[in-house]
Image 1 (tube, rainbow over the protein chains, first blue to last red):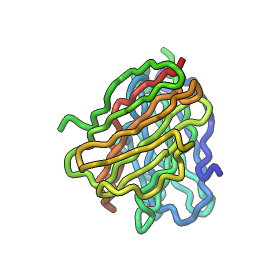
Image 2: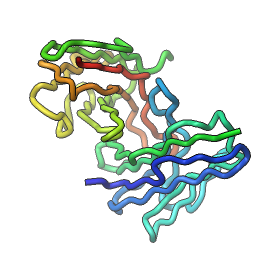
Image 3: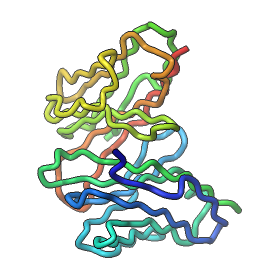
Length: 114
Length: 116
């Protein structure tokens, strides 16, 4: 059962453009939504995260937009750079009494071209 | 802190052999997770521990897989006997149970397992 659906599977963006990755979840008990960034040969690393009581969170060029009623959230990368080329995973977790178990999306391979 | 340390980084073994993957979590973290990553299935949670106790092993694919955490600073994932379909990158991650906004797992660099 895929509880967190992620799209697109791959994405090519020109340098300076906006990269957008979308996720949708099913379980309304999820109360924390992190995004992870993974470079080749490395483990995923926490990039940015949001709680469902906030509609948007911005950290530098990275922004999470959250739509609780639609059960959707997205990552926007502004002014995309070649160094942003990586695989991005959305995730969801039930922090309170949920056993601290993350459910990951299937990942998006982002390539930023010059 | 050196982060989550996994060994070996790469492992090539023959079908039928026993394979042991090792993980040292971040000191003080009370949760440890083992994940498997493949192109076809993405990141799959195999098992996780809380305070060295296995909490959920429902992701362990078969009895050929076993995991232990004898103390807070060490965990192993063993595959016996190994099969070609076990070829994947295996990640260990650890975390401290928190409810703050910076909650997240810290992953190791992974072990790339190839079974021939």
